[in-house]
Image 1: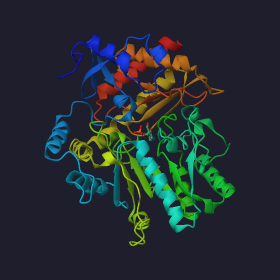
Image 2: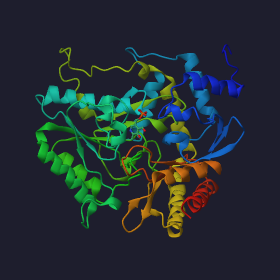
Image 3: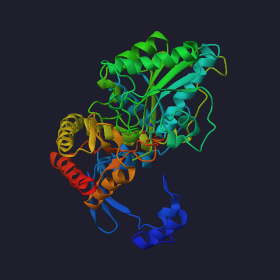
Image 4: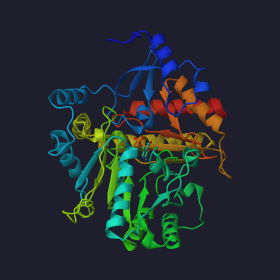
Length: 459
Ligand code: PLP
């Protein structure tokens, strides 16, 4: 390999990294003071760092991505074979894996019929925002151009998607944002905003209140995570989604479900929205789509929406005037196709349901033991434990202590996550999202590590 630094010389790699790489989400003055952990290998649920230390990964690559686990040779081979045959084509005529994967994906999404390829979750969501705006221009005389988004949800890192960030710390410092994105309240019952019995319906009614305030004829769409991820693993309360769906139908508002985290098995169904009987107009997905083996995202929609973009074939403006250069890479759909085969053939949806139940049961036992756990929430292999200083007042636990729990688990060789630097005053939820291949022994090892860490940090 023609590199200046020998890739097997880890200290040289770290040196090059320190000098040249600008890391995601990192304060570099602090970064300079640490001895960075360089991961060099992964197999299944396990990772190894350059010093040879082994870790059990309970967060699927840090951000809910490696759904089928590390070291999948069949995915690597599918990508390799495809790249040798044809690595790229984005022009007219398409390419083989894009067509095959779209067909396969849609078999898991009754009611949906078109797939638009790009590379990241943010991009997939921006495509929807553009589609909604274009529909407003062409079919609603410029009305219905606003998009609703929910407090505590997250939809991406671009300026457009940050305009729909319900996590204020992420969006701070990058404004001003474009007009037309309007926030609605979150639906977390544990942190009640209304003292009512039927909390799910009440939280959905709050969306209707915003619609009426803004004017229903100004609202084109609403974007929602089926289960909020980085905002603290918020599982919607009973009755919420039914009412949301009703409201969308009543005011002709397109329903955009952001499945970037929940999609492709994470909650035990192919898609999170399928747990709630939702009929979306748009579904976006990215992370687990190819489990991080290749960059790919999809914006999926219905034939009804698709038809709105071909209404006037002779008009040069009557089509979706958008391109994603690397949406033409064939590695993404080739990897996604094999990823989906693995989930099917290995029964990983069933495993996710079973292991998710075990994880929730273990967390429930920890809640009995540790008063610092105020609430546990989960859907499939996607769980959270909210830590509080006081169960009665629900005052959030000290963020530094929450991070200390994460740090102690890491020292024990188990990688867990926590909401971090995103919600002012509410970065207090431990987040767990092991790969869908997790075994009972893996799940128990994860919760045993948390048990020890909670005892150490909180007594
Ligand atoms: N949507 C959700 C729900 C996410 O959690 C994320 C990223 O964490 C995104 C969208 C953005 O995805 P990406 O980082 O691939 O742009």
